[in-house]
Picture 1 (cartoon, one colour):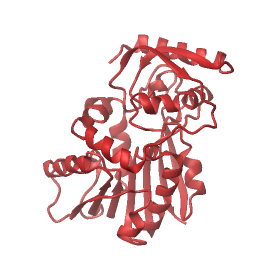
Picture 2 (cartoon, helix red, strand yellow):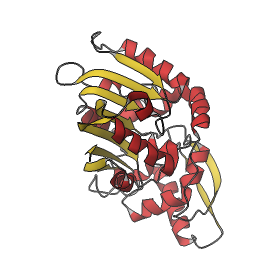
Picture 3 (spheres, helix red, strand yellow):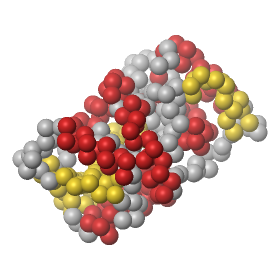
Picture 4 (tube, helix red, strand yellow):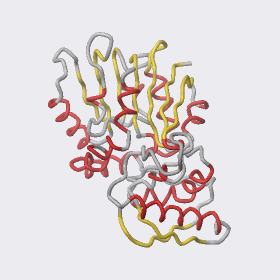
Length: 303
């Protein structure tokens, strides 16, 4: 992991360079290029701390590379490309065995992501569907049994990820009477077809919408709205465009490069709140920002 001082200095240089020369054809950005370029919360986190250099509360500060990177200027209204379902399946099969080293473990704990998971997923109850389950990092955050999760259906587009999640579920002390099902499916198009309308009390997703791109994410939200019960909740923790103008501009400029250079296809400047508000059958009840809005939690209901 890069030292705090050197990383902060490099980020400041990047942001200033981008903002000063955004009208030119290209900007040359010298930095430590991190896995999703989202640890900019160190630079300006006016929501979470009293000074500008505290609360590194974003996951994925790992796999950093030293070097000079040339990033083309991308206008803020250009959407970075997302992984297709087939490409996502193939790619995440490859990542599955080592994915926890990047998205879990002590790094996730130190950045506060485990706390965010626990807070939101503690609300899950009844028959629960989780999409984009990955390696099952959320499993230990659920409350199983009376008043909590009584059945769990785990969906992912990658067989490799599902295998890892199943292995993790067997290592966790989950009541044997709690049925757990693992299903390979495309959450952007197959949820209602597979499970039917009004099936689940709670639908969960953490950090999957960005991989689907803007159009895929909108479709996924509508699929989730379809399968949740009228009395149920949809619980989300997602990458989002920062509420801080400086960081938001940086995300817009680097979204495509970040997705290609180590973000595993994650388009990390989505306006998820706006997507929810425009989704059919879904109503946003509560939104909470973390790390200057670089990621947020959402509690939604069926409309």
